[in-house]
Image (tube, rainbow, N blue to C red; front, side, top):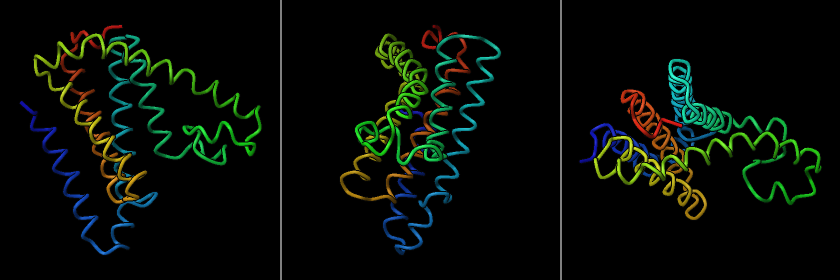
Amino acid sequence: MIPRSTIAVLAVVATICIGGLIAPHRSALRLTAEGGPVELASAVVLVVALLTAIVQLASRFSLAWLSGAALMLWALLRELDFQKRFTYRSIESIPYYVSPRAPWQEKMVVILIMIPFAVAGLHLLRLFCRHFRRELQKREPWTIHLLAAFALGIVGVASEKLLKLHTVEEPCELGAELLGLLMLLDLQKKRVEPVIQS
């Protein structure tokens, strides 16, 4: 059974996407532009998710919650385009590392900064792979949130890279972040959930 909260998030995303597609072009672009309402909402969701992970980490330390907090911080910095203050383009793309525009010293610093976030992501991936199938069979809400977030992520990337629909990509990203927050809240409520044990 799909949790109502997941259905609500998907409904909101669908409404924003449809509205963006049928609205006048300028209005749709304002809605999903850099610094626009959708991006601002994404930043707020990520701040709340980061605070949730920090509170859980403070009350019950585990490497999993530390990794979750690290990934929320990375996602927030990415949403705020923090890296563009120091680099000429996104540091999450291969062209940045092969381009002669960025000096090798800068690339090395970027790689060193990214290593802790990559380790955090791999740690969570290992835990999710270990527990996901069993928890999904029990229809645990966090697994549904995760699957829906993953699906929205794919739709968002495909709409931007293949279809060039920026009005769809941003709402999908917001929806994935909302579902990520719901997943954190669900895991926080459980407290004894195996997935949050390191």
